[in-house]
Image (cartoon, rainbow, N blue to C red):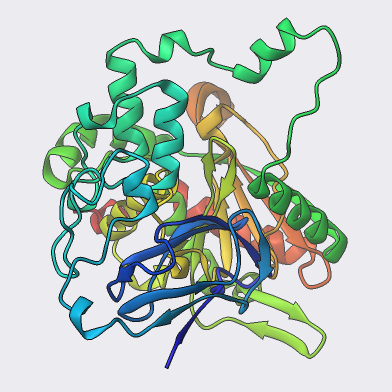
Length: 405
């Protein structure tokens, strides 16, 4: 009996996905959990594993087609007995980097050879003219990641030959208006942003916070922290920890507004916005209230790295209940972020800067930042939002460093 391969649910607000690349051809043997197809949504670009071992019997949705969640993408049939123990075949991705049937044999249980590359890496390698056989991979099973490729290109000054902003360079050469194609990711983000603004009346409230004690702690301990943990000590885990504590005390900020009533979420799942080359993605720190500061720091760094390499799993962008956006990562002091539906709030944390402030009628230099909270005014009022931000401000200004490793 054939097994269906369906478009998975990638998040509460995701209704559809696009098939980017089939990694197997019809008739090829595939192992259970072996990557079968690369798909793209506004939440994540990901490779979907085969739900069963067998043969790719039929491809229903072709590359470039967009279909709703739950749609059948393909069928996996039973492999003939004589092929059950044979090689699962060479995928299209492997063929595209020069692996032929005379090349490496891949068994269902053996790790892939290092000549297997994701569609995103293949596309980037073509763009920069990089021979992937010369790049040492640091990803799973020795795979070359986007970071590996870009680091390699940078070391050999290959990137210097490519304009930093290829679009701007193209505009300069053009003698007429240019029309750029809209990527699926950008189109999906645009639709989600419009839908969010149409759904929820947005209000943004901004509080100033003195993070001098955290800035001084970071400066004094960042080297030792990295030596102990292998993690760079940024402001983000401090903000996430303060957010979790504030959400615990103000549960309406960890809720959703529905026609049936207000849904107070039991889990505190913090989405952390990550900027990509062509958009934005929000991986989720699940049950953040049950995790230590070190775990939050490690998972935040890991999710951000894998987001940029497009290696997130579908479940890692689902079920967020509140979102944190590090506006300061790109120099912004203040911002008015748009809510991730169906959440009711999103916090923007601005760049930390030293500036003169007045304390006890004296001017002193402090490390200051802004907390920018956008909230759904259908459920949250200014007083409640202010109480939430005051709680965060207190947590950050009087941070308990005893919880750090």
